[in-house]
Image 1 (tube, rainbow, N blue to C red):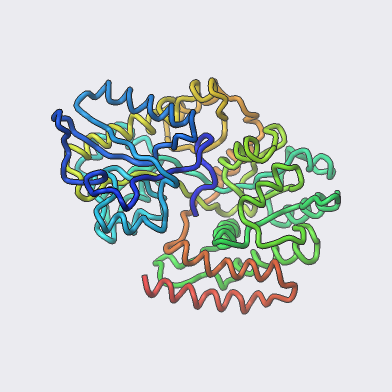
Image 2: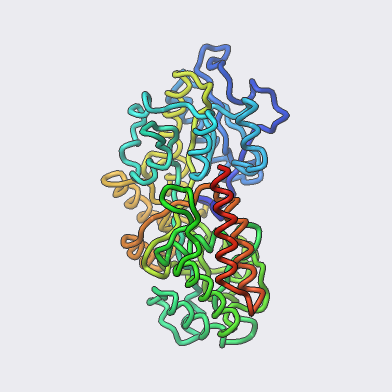
Length: 449
């Protein structure tokens, strides 16, 4: 799945509709009339996101001033990547020179031959060696580099500290196991007045996404290591569904309304009627700015279960038609915009704080070593959210296996959506049969890919 929110306050955006001419997006023409190297880039914030648009334009202008031989042409639209048009744009030669992708797109773009090989040029990206290896590996296929990570996230447990206190729970000791989640959810639901202890998604592929995250937390996986067989019909898969079933039907801690999607659950949490749900840190500013929540009440814990957590994120790849000059220019642009610790569109925390954007959330955490230390130092100095509310998440993540989404994620999530929704809407749902049937359908998806 895509992330649920983004670095500040805008949702990720995309660009260049299919109606635009090829020359407006990626092309072999790498020079403008002035002789500059010209690159088209996407994921520019829309005009409706005034502050982020201003930041983006300021940073592009600063880059062009520092690099007078490069002309950057940004495109905006919503979203940054539309799954309905993404492949068509690639196949039709209408993709920008430097284009946004989710982590789960990387191998696919390479497989269909639409990505430029960055391996000969990546040494010119100053920040490359400072980026977390596991994130770099996502864009590395058969030893060749085809993309550059921009952000990364991992799933955790967002919980309402005020409701924890009201239910007699210690808000500084969040659940670390699924049994503890179940116990806490039951106590919170007992508060009454429409309060729900734990909520989960079960529609629009989001239920399958969360099933995957919960399966990882139990030490399981969705597909085999070679990507050829489903591995959901397992003790770990049954444990995920049995926990959901018991919270829904035995404990009555998940409320009666089901088939929820992200907006439903965020609304519940923002209104103070929900104790816990799974999400990435970027949900927190959405809960405050759009759903009525309060930063002091919202805390983040690591994924329960202690085994693993789902990671995701985004980055940029380069059009296969991009010239060497465009690739070099694009890498310079990425360094300037996104990959300089404490600076640029994502890292200028002083500017973000001045404009009342949240600073101090525990992710994204892209860098390692000295680069990470600098980024964290600048972030801490400008923090305007209660960073202590996220410390257990940071500490707990050190012991979890970080696992990316499965191949053919959206197709698989569609299958698993039906499994989760059945368990949450039918008290007598046959978990064994649901998992067996889902396993067969996923095997079919993998066989066709």
